[in-house]
Length: 102
Image (tube, rainbow, N blue to C red; front, side, top):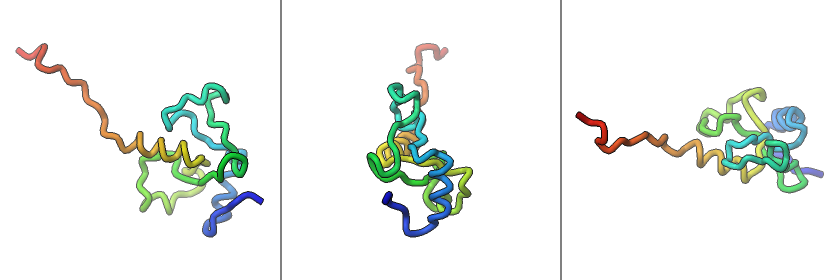
């Protein structure tokens, strides 16, 4: 038996069914997943339990809890953690160091 959350089980099952019980990360974690066709190969219960989390990893938890199934994706813990770290990084700005200042 594969693990399921204790709350929102129907929502979780809907997300996993849509995902085919496979992590839906296609590179937001920083990995290309090239060896598995561009999508993370982890499957629910095989490598680790998957979770239903926002498709946009930058969405804060206080908003994520009320999202409908079509705004959620199946994530393995590794991809989800890495994608959230990446999403929280401040954007880098191009600095010209005064080279073209007049």
